[in-house]
Length: 223
Image 1 (cartoon, helix red, strand yellow):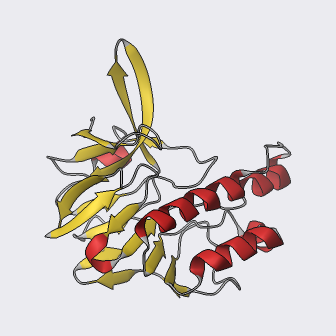
Image 2 (tube, helix red, strand yellow):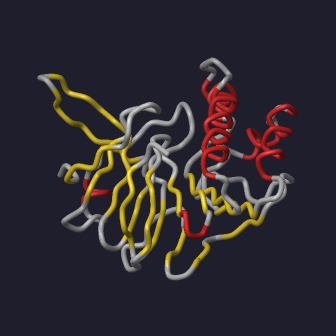
């Protein structure tokens, strides 16, 4: 598995190139901000037409991670759907593919700020979930520790060989992990923005995600 292993709250975790988080001892795969149906929502609300392939691309990526890790539990950390209409408009073939991914696994939908609420796709719907001493929620809570969240879609700017590059990243410090958006057509918030700088305490790291065929790269979190 081409990931970056690290220790958090005394547990061994792995950041995958896709932006997923894998907890091998729990056989748990965690992803955040799938935003399924985003192209449908943009077309409906803004009149802009994007290639309607983001749901397929996101589910294909998720299928690859599930095949590679064989999880017994999958946690989707909120904003799994772009809105209620996008969930309802999900193509039957995509629903079938998602059902195959969910089959035989404990699948947890964490509530996000975009999510339409429980939909008829099965799984368990939760506001948050605590396993051992790690809590999974959509938005980081500054007063809590040992939490994994998403919401902010973190990314980082770096300079390499005289060029400025932007990459999605996983943010990690002693108290929390913030995952990047897993879905296609999702933007991001640079990790030197006040919203993220205020949450992450030194020595925080940004685990850069250069691409599917390259291992994640940890660097000090840019501020």
